[in-house]
Structure formats: C-alpha cells, structure tokens
Image (tube, rainbow, N blue to C red):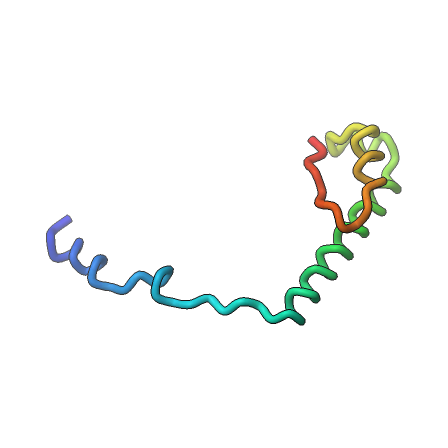
Length: 81
C-alpha cells in the first residue's frame, strides 16, 4: 500500500464523531417498548404451549421453559440453552 492510498482514507471525516445521531422521540420510545413487551409476551405464551418433545428438539429443558414462561412480560428474556 502506497502513502497516497493510505492518505486517502485518513483525509475523510470520521462519520461516527461528526454526525449527530438523533434521539428517538418519547412517542417512538413508547412504541418500541410496547412492541418489545408484546414480542416477549408472545414468545413466552408460545414457550408455554410447547410440548416436551418440541422443547427437547430445540435444546430447552422443560424446567427452563416453565421458568421463562412464568416471568412477566416486562422482564428480559434469558438464555434457555
């Protein structure tokens, strides 16, 4: 790599430090939170409906599935494996 080709990359502005990332509005954050909560509730509902064979095929123990399915929607999902 020549000096000229290296200099080409350093002369461009750094996009991560110069561009300001806009913060989501309150409405957007609420919508995102509600969407995450809905997704967690659906995942836990589906997990509770799975039979032992399906859980075994997915590599999830029935105890871990039961524990995760019993948690409220506002708590984060944990790793089941």
